[in-house]
Amino acid sequence: GSDKRGGHDVRDDDALERLQAGDESDLLAVDQALRRLAQISDRLREVVELHVFAGLEFSDIAACLELTERTIFRDWRKARALLQNMLVQA
Image (cartoon, rainbow, N blue to C red; front, side, top):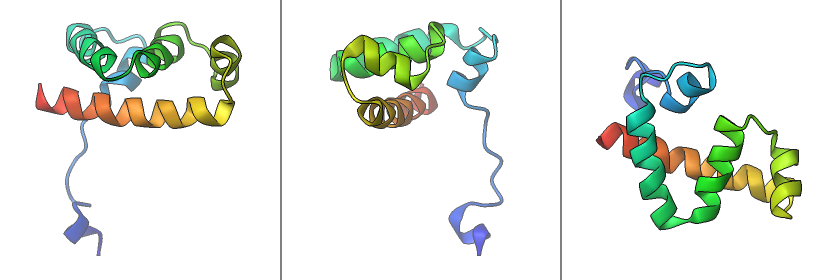
């Protein structure tokens, strides 16, 4: 059943996860994607930067931006999906 949904495909490592682990090989591509993300939403870009580069937890980001943790988590999921899409296209 998983074969018809692409279960046999090997998934590339996520560039954001590699950055969080300290691998800067995709830094230029991520920077360009973050610039494109900022054109869509500054808040999404800020959530990514605070989480990935500053290492803040969602609760800390929520406090900084005066939003709920649930909103920050939804923003993170949306931003991550957009960035992954941008990075695959690059």
